[in-house]
Structure formats: C-alpha cells, structure tokens
Image (cartoon, rainbow, N blue to C red; front, top):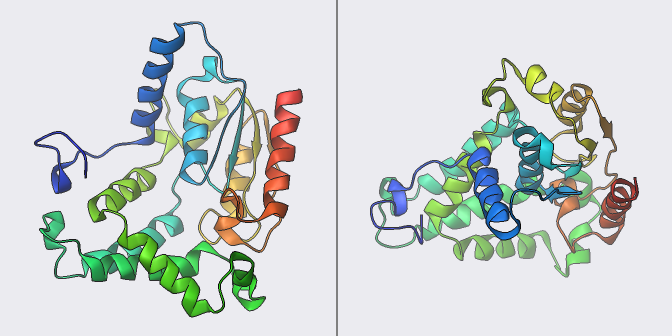
Length: 252
C-alpha cells in the first residue's frame, strides 16, 4: 500500500493471497530461466514458510522439496484470533481513520509492537531472561525495541501482510475439496519444522497438517525462543537445526 500505483494506495490496496505471491514469483522465474527450471528446495520462516508450502501446493511439478519452519499451511483459528488482537491495538488509534490517515498512527504502531512481543517468544524465554542474549538489559528494553521497530513500518503495509497471513487456507485452492484433499496432493519431500514453543504456529497444528501429507516428516525445532526460534541470526542453536534439515533435503 505504501508504494502502490495511484488508485491502489493506502486503504485502497487490494487483498493479496499467498497464491498470488507464488504466481508472481513463478512468472519472474519463467522470464529469467524459461519454462524448464526446477527448484531443489523451497524454504522459509513464518509467512515465508507458508509461502514455501504454497509453492509445493500450487506448482507441485516445479518443487522437489520444502522446509517450512515455524509455520503452518493454514492460518488456524487461534492464530487468526491472535492477529485480530494486534490489529485492534493498531486500529484503536484515533489517527488510524480507517486506514486513510494523514499522519502515521504512532500510538497504534507502538501498541501493535508491544502487544505482539508477548506472542513472539515463549514463556520460558522470558522466565529464563533469554532476552539478554539479544543485548537487552530488561524486558522493558525489549518492549521499547518492538515499539520503535514498528514505528518504522507503514500501518497499511502491516495490515496488508496480516490479511495475506489470515487468508492462508489450502482448501480454497483450485480443485481442492478440503484441507485433507489439498495436502494429500503435496508430492514434494517435506520436513515440517514447527518450533516447540511457538504460541501461534503450534506443534499440534503442524503435526496435524504433516499427517495429511504423503511425503512429510515432522521434525520439531527444539527451542525456548518461541516463534522467533526461526528468525535468522537470533538463536544459533535453533538455526543449526534448520541448516541440518536443509542439508538432509539437499543431500537426498
């Protein structure tokens, strides 16, 4: 929304799905490499992982293996409700004006970041003061960082991303009659890697989805870092597990 063409800026930006994203990427690859390319591995964290799953679902003939980590293919109901909460925190700012703001809704952006921080990490992360590993001297310092980080973002951009996230549902893909039917068509070799302490992309939801895939292994990412276990450069121990899974897929 913040850099869209005239008529599609701000609150007028159209809703984009993960399927839209992978189609755009497919078109780019076709232009660069012609029609005969193959992807050995598609991987990603969080929404990048959801996108990796959609690559294998939408273009199964192009994808040999996938490693989605800290994510699920569908935005499950509890995940959806969590996102409604952080959206409400942003939209409560009087400057929001239904997305047609003339000045950034700074209170809402700060509230979005502060509300999100409690979901990004696990209870053990806070109990064990693992935020110190990120260089923070207190929980308040961590929360201040989340506020300032979100102040740098455009509010409509944030909500557009969440709308894409919340719309994730393989059962609506062309030809699919249900989630079970859609995931049964996923032919790529898959390692599904949820974080053991992720509060919104849960192990239980990932396990259920993996059980519906014909060629998938559930490999739990053991970490107290919650959803942020998969964040590049944050937890070396967690990333070592991700890299090991990548090696296994590329070596096969």
